[in-house]
Length: 220
Ligand SMILES: NC(=O)c1ccc[n+]([C@@H]2O[C@H](COP(=O)([O-])OP(=O)(O)OC[C@H]3O[C@@H](n4cnc5c(N)ncnc54)[C@H](OP(=O)(O)O)[C@@H]3O)[C@@H](O)[C@H]2O)c1
Image (cartoon, rainbow, N blue to C red; front, side):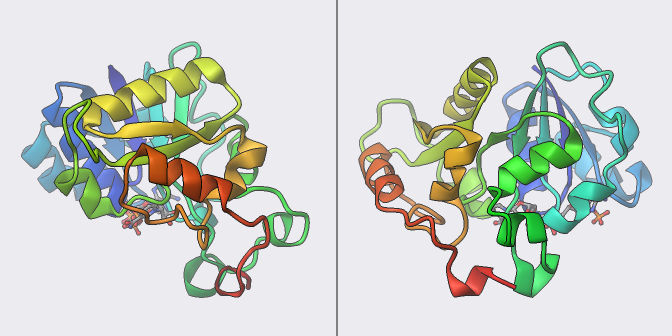
């Protein structure tokens, strides 16, 4: 699959490593420009790109930047993506440590991914947001293996969700459909599933036990 990754940090870097290892055609971008990504490109065979170019022709795009940086993404960065492109959002709102207050999330109650979708003008599939970056490298398992780790996946676009769940299976993880973007508070920071390293049954239970109340740690 042709994949564009925006963000080459903890999550973007490890997704670049694993997706290239699986044979996907990966382009990756950060804020400072392709000349700062030569080491990652050499290590993985990915193409270092600008944000403006990274999604060109992509069937899948991953947005994996700090939430506060989402409004800075250039408008139209998805314009030349393939028709029906699936966009993964890995983002989390960390108002205290990193992002500052985003009123639409905190006061108006938008889910973090609904906000991101509005910002970029394209629906997203929320995935990997509660997965430690290191787990992407360390915890894949074969399909059907007992205790294979599972990740919750939320989104409104069922076709895109299928693509994303298929890719996550290829990466070595089960998935649990956690509903629409408006349901995706169930996997936001502070919920039982956030950071959970467990299989389908435990992930399903954790999603069901989530509270819609944002915990104090994740309020500005
Ligand atoms: N770390 C984890 O284990 C983890 C787990 C799950 C979810 N998440 C979430 O996933 C997102 C990314 O986390 P991370 O830990 O991978 O972040 P990170 O290590 O801080 O990396 C952020 C990346 O985003 C790039 N970036 C920042 N602003 C940008 C912009 N305006 N345009 C293009 N690229 C930009 C940075 O590029 P430069 O370096 O060039 O500035 C960097 O490559 C966050 O929302 C985080 O909460 C993280």
